[in-house]
Length: 111
Length: 108
Image: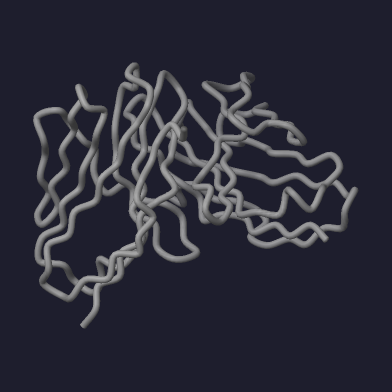
């Protein structure tokens, strides 16, 4: 089992560019989450999904969109990147038990 | 007021010391409580869940006080490998709220 994987691991964007971050899990988990982590702020929830075809907003959803077309994948999109979106992005998944399993993170810099 | 508050530290302790971390949360309807460990530039990993009755896993003991909305983590006989950031996490229905973390550095 690979667990939770994230693609890419690193990315540098220019302001206004778009990109999609991919999260994949092979544990057949229903719930998936996208967080961002900034110094002194802790992890903040961007969007989450409680099952295939569903998404919901978290604490800081502005500037991001998500899709969960397949149960194993959760995509996070930035339509027009801004320097304020420079962060480390973590994806997580869980089943009906409450432990979240995290991916290794994507380090995004927006210039 | 933050929903989950932790002392950011850092806590610098010698090997073998006992160290305690505290966390408070504001939502009395919170359902589950956890401590996660995060190493530098790595993803968070579950250290232990926290129950009202208190629970222990080797050198680690976690306590929950629902009345005071307070969670604690005690580490006994600290090891160099315990150096990390410890995140207090509180779960609502679907969402998890993370504290900003407490940094621990265990010194030789």
